[in-house]
Length: 328
Image 1 (cartoon, one colour):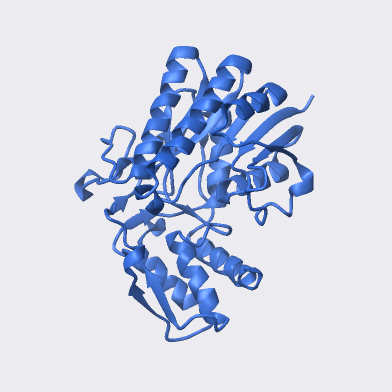
Image 2 (image 1 turned 90 degrees about the vertical axis):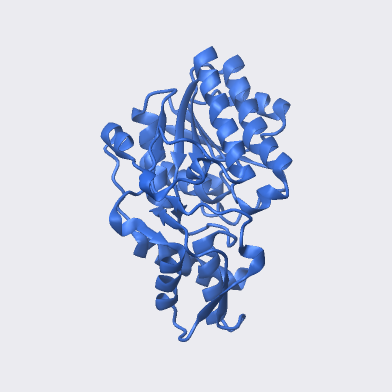
């Protein structure tokens, strides 16, 4: 008998790549995907739309979530439905808490009441660590949480309730904190994707050869989204429920400032003499100078190893926007 796998947020960036991974690599499963009625954009999923079963469900609606879980009783849930772009969280903290915390709570409650054997993989964020001094790097699971934006606070709250449900009810939660991951289908409000989107517009003659940017000095370890979804599958197979795992690319050739990756992208462009300028609306009220993870525990347990590098990330993202730019 095939096992039921549920992917929430499947129309988004990571969710759509997770479905791609499952369709390509995992046999004897039924894939169920959520969308928010008429609100979800389907651009990312048209290539597999007819290969999965779709269910209309807004995770902030507890009745809809309960109906969903009772219906399919999934073996595993990959929970990607979230508000994930940091900047709007200052203006809309209630919305972020409603989706990231209350939405997750609705799923946990439904599992507790109607599908106790379900294992749920819930991605957290490196943003939860906030301001970490350079001499405290790399970040590990014992690093003190010092969030500096409302988004990070909602993800911390999400992780805490995950742990409470594990301890109180035995809910099979795999807790992760994932660091920067990029690639095709990332919305153009995020750093690398924003740069690539603007370069694609410049190449088409739709924008002057000046890229608008935010803070460029922050340093990150960048991982390709295709490696990340592989990591989530391995987490679902090999990681202990209730435990916390950090996921990211710790190779030295994956660690760059945003200025460095921007200049790499500019070199990939077919246009010459592209410059960049700080655009005040893109600068956040507070920044996180360093997000660099120690993933040794996760690697030891899963044997996961990223296979794609920064060049793959940049080329895939730029090519994606070159193809998409005429559609928008």
